[in-house]
Image 1 (cartoon, rainbow, N blue to C red):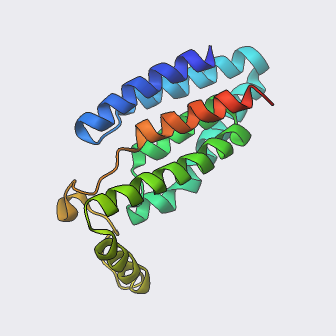
Image 2: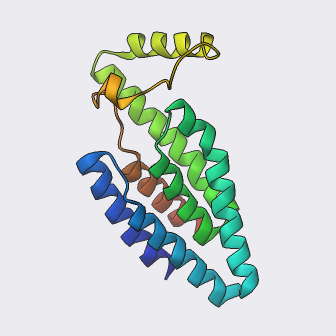
Image 3: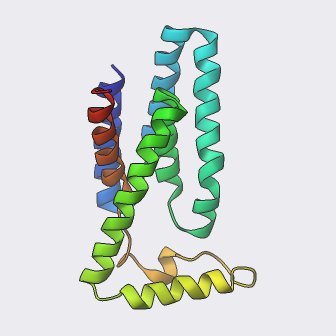
Amino acid sequence: MREFIMLNVFICTAVSDLQNYKIRNSVILAGWAAGICINILQSGVYGVANTIFCIMVTIIAGFPLFMTGGIGAGDIKLLSVIGGIYGLAFLGKVTLLFLVMAGVVSLVELIRKRALITRVRAFIYYLLHIRTAQGKYYQRERDGNGFTICLAPIMAAAYFIILLFAGKE
């Protein structure tokens, strides 16, 4: 049942992310509600508390990445859906693989667009001036969508890879 819910969540979020670089809150809310329902059936009131705890921990842990512009709020909320349904241990595995895969995709795109050195310089400048920098490292209004990576499909791939190998443990 969890896999069916996540499949639908990922289809909706990936399509939305690829079309307009946004993940709709209605899909996230449905995922959170599904997580609460699944966990209440399995563990009662403890399941609800655990689901809410996992969602909140994920959002709090992802907030610094959002504040720097490294990841969108929708992507963090999508991670929280995974955490709410599966728990933090499974989420940790998905997150690690997701970050590696997103980094590789980003690196390949920067090389393909011949912008690796330019973007690395911009990132180093941002890090060196983080106390005085106004705003985020990446701002869509300023930087455009030329270097935007849609993360929902990458997260879906990481989820399914971890799910495939978790079943073999």
